[in-house]
Image 1: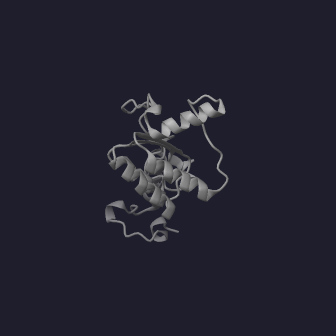
Image 2: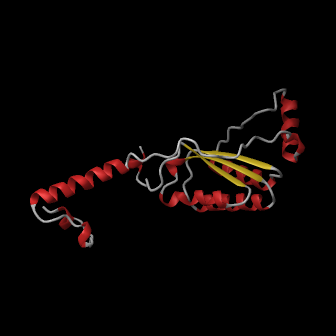
Image 3: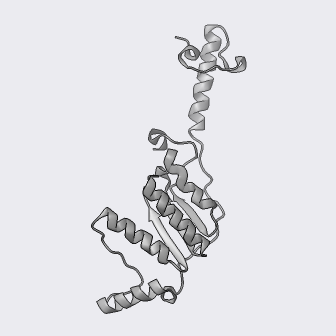
Length: 180
């Protein structure tokens, strides 16, 4: 079967395989090699990025003071902390509350962002915080930024929002099969 007959494409004459079995085979091998080598494309090793550091004095904010007071009461160090949250609803409302209360900076890390109504609300809250002058840093695994989920990449265009991708992949690799 002729490969162009199997594809529902109207290719220009210059892209159609030439006549004759030997010429068609050469054209098909050339096309296959071009596709294989394009799959070897890589991102640059080093990209100039501004140095970004955590807030030096977090106790200068209302939330920082509340966290420091809670850490002192519990007798723990206040340089890091986390809380286990038992429900999706509580996790989302807690996140939204923290975003709305942010005064200086927000640092977010996500493995997967699936674009839906809740994500859209989260992004809108982040844009509003950035508009208030809050510096927002987001670290995201690039594996989940394809297709509809690529909407998260638009945040990088907003003022005061810095988006960095963990293990960035060449653009256009929408299929999970080709992203592995």
